[in-house]
Image (cartoon, rainbow, N blue to C red; front, side, top):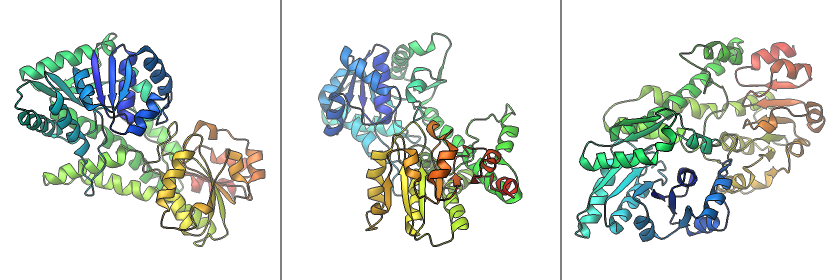
Length: 460
């Protein structure tokens, strides 16, 4: 099939490349000429394992092309995927300006039936707004032609997006019951047929339910994370090992083990904004989502927990103190710094007068860009942050190591070398990578999340 993808960000680029990999003829549109130049030059503007190879292979075959030409993009695809950003507005609601602009552009240039697919994460009712924008653009041209708006939310995990797309656990598609909607359903069924050969993975529903499903999924996952983080903070007070608790409750098949890891808070482009957007939708209908309000509050607090532990250990004034930080991205296998816990901790350390050496296997360039923006109003802040060449280089002269991202490269370091490079053998582990008992045997003072009381007993 001929497919157009509008937007070459995280969702759009993965979707376009993977659909081309399945044999479709894919045209990717983006109005950012710089991004298109990178893609046409063989580069990839984001870090996602396996994506560069798929893009290169399908560009070479001619099944995948990138352009800024709006008219050509509309002419190309019988199915038009809208995969543009929906950043949070000032009130927390999803900003739909880019989605609706894409819809208007389709309406300005389409000449026959099109299926418009909302791939972006959008609030309930967005398909109606997209349809209205299309009708308005068509009316301006005095053109009568049919179209259908479909909701097909993405469920991609950063760091595993290619695998998630090519081996989905579910495909959610919302269509209406009109003749145009039935025609769109048939086309979407053909497009996704390769994923359903072993067993049916597609869940068909009405458009609004599909839009809601995406928010409900992310809200549930965010809730599990904040639930465990809140319990972990209590575990620190009452002498409980939260990892033992995690195993104990995760073994219940009604609960499961996924997203039950205590840590220093969730980040990224999805959970924070989607929880806020769902809360905002509820407010528009005079309903309060009390659980989600608590989820957000717990997460915001959790990003300060490591800073509080550091202050408890070293004092309020950190002037003259130097710390090493491993991990800057909000999660491993990505360079995404959006809402990353590292940004909160670094701001706290710098505000209190400390200096820091940081290392991340992938996110260093993006971190330099983002942190420069974060600290633009603090004259000497960037001078107090050293970007190290490797993990061990970051440790030199540091009075403690702080771990913020659970990269595999950090799981089994040479602890003897680590101790020799640090000024003092102290670790603040925001992802509970290490066992407190082993750290005590190695002579390392260890502070985890929900494990600190256990650690102090073993070190006593």
